[in-house]
Image (tube, rainbow, N blue to C red; front, top):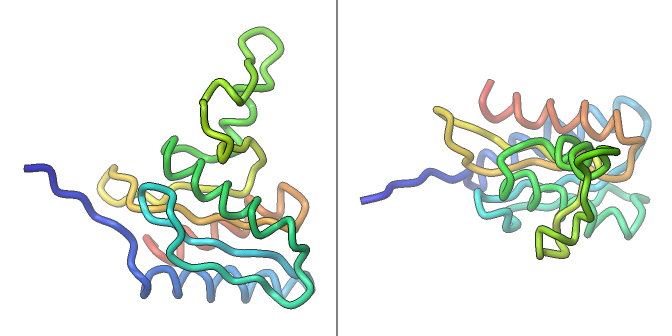
Length: 138
């Protein structure tokens, strides 16, 4: 029998609190998402003033990171490769994105969920998402 683990509400809240604190420390606002291993939403925080488009972008970053089991930035780099690149639509799923800021969360090598941030410059989205992963797995 296959057994799988998933992030729960408690872990999602830990990650959101850590990421929210870092974004606030920087004097900025963003949308923060935590998803299960299928990429489906566990928790979402839209900080006051965060742009509305960032809601779907953050959800799609978490979805992509969980489904692909890799950072969304890696997905984007693959599709933009000048020689081996391809249209991201080839994944057959409109929710796949290639902007940085979505990271899978792994426990014992298994993807148990994902965290994502949208609304900051891409490098900051990636940095803050890493803080969310560390809040969960240490």
